[in-house]
Image (cartoon, rainbow over all chains, first blue to last red; front, side, top):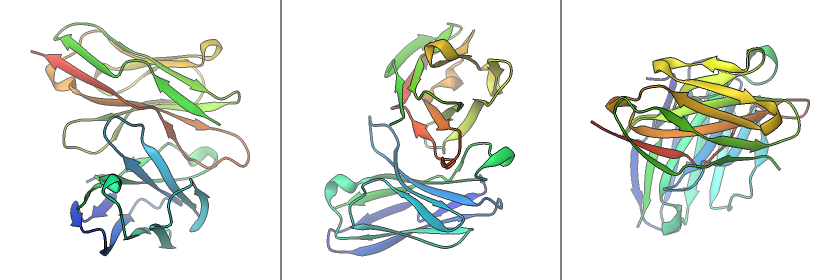
Length: 115
Length: 116
């Protein structure tokens, strides 16, 4: 375990379903991130939360909706997805800003398949 | 906008061969630089990082990287690879300075296959 836990590990959903991905970190970090990892593409930054506020939204379609209720939890709510949204969704956390920034700790990811 | 470019998409080496993976970034300011590795079926984990000081940094498992500021490069090296180094390697950049979050911008990754 890395200290960042993602659930579920695998998810298969239909295009009309609604599901949520969960990320939890026990590292005391104050920033959390969602990335999309598709085959043969760079990791795509989706959302950045710093001190529980969304500070970045990288032109992500509205069918992806993030939620950060506290500094330890991050959700990604999914609805009416498309097959091209099938990918590995990675959560990461960091202690943002200043001397305590050492880069990310990643979760193991959720492998999402949209059918 | 910041970007990271990894020149090699797929590298195949025999055991004991030397490795060098290229990474260039585009950002004119001060940066933190990282290499992450993803072994098959596992999560991304930190291999090494550069924040300041000696531009030659050493990481885990015998890897090292050299920051050449004039070339905007942070190439990863290992003198002698092992079969267990088979993995995907990602270079990443964090732009330092006011207003910047701790976000990382990643390259597209390099798949390393080491033949026994």
